[in-house]
Image (cartoon, rainbow, N blue to C red; front, side):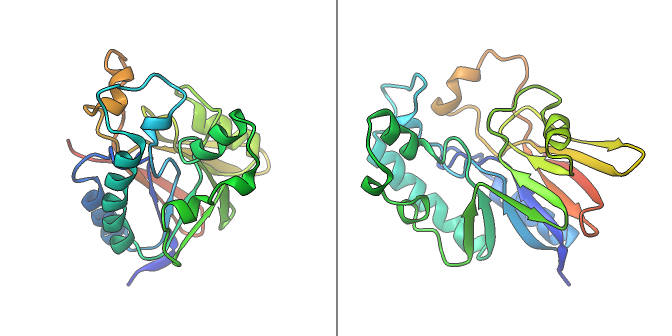
Amino acid sequence: MYHKDHILVIGDTHIPFELPGYLDFCLSIQKRVKCGTVVHIGDLVDNHAISYHEHDPNGKSPIDEMKEADEHLKRWFKAFPVLRTCRGNHDRLVDRKGKTNGLPERCFKSFREIWNLPKGWIDDFWFDIDGVHYTHGTGLSGDNAPEKAAQQNRQSTVIGHVHHVGSVKYLVSEKDRIFGMGVGCGIDRKTYAFEYGRDFSKKPVIGCGVVTDQGKYAQFFPMEI
């Protein structure tokens, strides 16, 4: 029996550059912990071809990358028919590019229209579930990013964004106990989209998170590579 207050938190996928096997890994953790609620922490898609950062001239064109992402997304939609997804900085690249070029929002489709999100998928910048705040983590960095997010929000907080952080840290005061969890990611760092990090000493931590017991406990599950 799956429990509504057992929440599976999927890390940044950057589709179509997610790691092969990551989807099955997330499904296995959902089954193992009987998670009845699923949250994607953001950067569902990568949008490498329209990134502000240096991109590979030998890589896919914007339309070809989108077409490949569409095919990958179909598998995720089927695996998780009901899901809440936070909007990450990569998810918002279309809007950001529009503003850079002075175009109003009405010139663009919404995120869910662009990627044909199914009815069971809800997208927003953040979600509060059982007193826990779920947000992508845009603007945060460093090994203690989840802890900083919890302190800033003054409540237990789950983030992604910082690919090399997969951890849980509890913080206790005279008034309460909260946690900050970073859920790592599900990216394939050997693809050209992540060439920028080839020489980084800190590599992406592949895994996902789980929050249970009405927001009391959190656990990070690393994926065997």
